Image 1: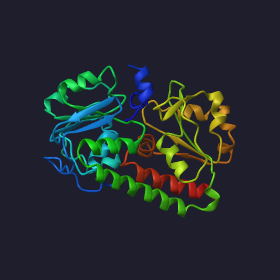
Image 2 (image 1 turned 120 degrees about the vertical axis):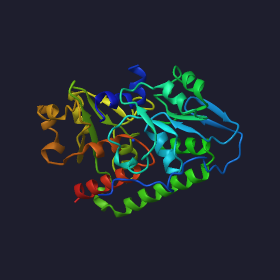
Image 3 (image 1 turned 60 degrees about the horizontal axis):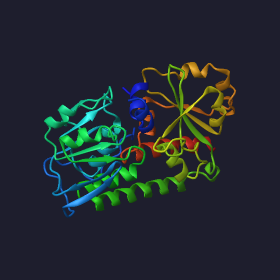
Image 4 (image 1 turned 90 degrees about the vertical axis):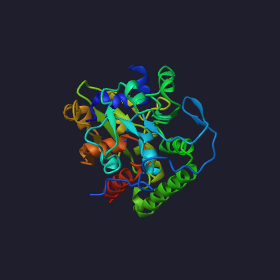
Length: 322
């Protein structure tokens, strides 16, 4: 379950200061077991979030540090890891059927189990930045060659993983495929949707409020669909930013999405406050409570969450623009 602690631990900047009907996006090919079907030449050097890593040969035993973007990118390329860190239980819908039978360890507390990773005897570790930091990277590299992938950008993540496993052409094709889906969705939206002001917030029982910014999945899809921009990113690498109750007017607009992550949900308390009730979007009734699964997807940026997020936003925006 994604509660406030996991929400924060999944977020790059906040992690650094405190120590992923038709909901499933399918990969380009069914994940294979055993050797990686690499088509690239080795040795090769992969530039990543924390430097560069040289791989002399194609990796055969890959571990994903989390169940986030690096796992989604690998699975979308048709490759299964020998193990991964599991933050969310039950498995989110975009991973349904793709991780059956895969080994994992409990990462819900946010602490990487390096001994467990080492037990899988990997020759490559893929792990998102935030779990891999300048401080923790040596512990990962003591286990195996490591590529630190992007947390905040699915495109960069997919390219990094594709290059590491010698499937950069397939990664490029997947990126173009997702872009085409978004472009098609934009043509289906009514003209009145252009410039529509959408925002998305999460609240927790300690009183904290977070707004998804323009670099979040919701922010990037909104821009691609021709909507008004979400609030600008306040911290580099971050997809959410803290918001005080007094600043709620910044998320007023035409449509407001309320994210719910289960334990520690503070949205009911926020909705009792006059500063929330006074928002024009609330008074107009243009507020949508997202399910936990929808909330998870709209927060986690990955190649496998593009389609469920796109379907959600297309449906909600089309209804709001009528």
